[in-house]
Length: 146
Image (cartoon, rainbow, N blue to C red; front, side):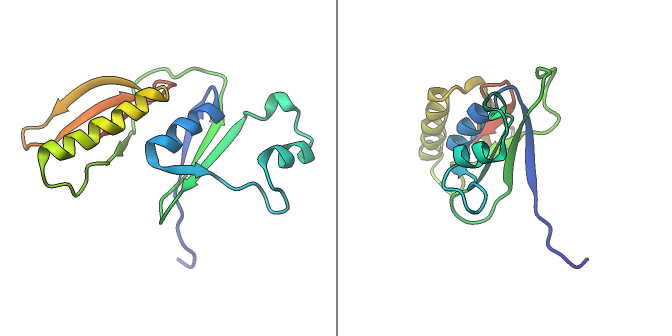
């Protein structure tokens, strides 16, 4: 192999812009930069000639700090049909030793996500002591906060 491997996670969405805003909060990401030569995405989309009604066909996020996959949101006509076969785990409590403090951190993030359109599905615990919250994003995609 001669190149590097990059990972992009792609979400099908009814409203890519709104869904990317949710995941930016969930993961601490930001909107990807517009193409070179443009200050904003609006300028780039206007220059491309894409009709304004199609400006929400796609959106992309990148990590604020450090490495991580790019997230791409693409508009699709069909609604989500069933349970995800893949989901993201949002680990906000990682490294916090005290279980009460860790859970407080998890729940603070859950509350932020509820505030931007997330839904709690259920609280779960494993036999080996893990504790997490199952949630859905605004379009029904399941994920866990731990």
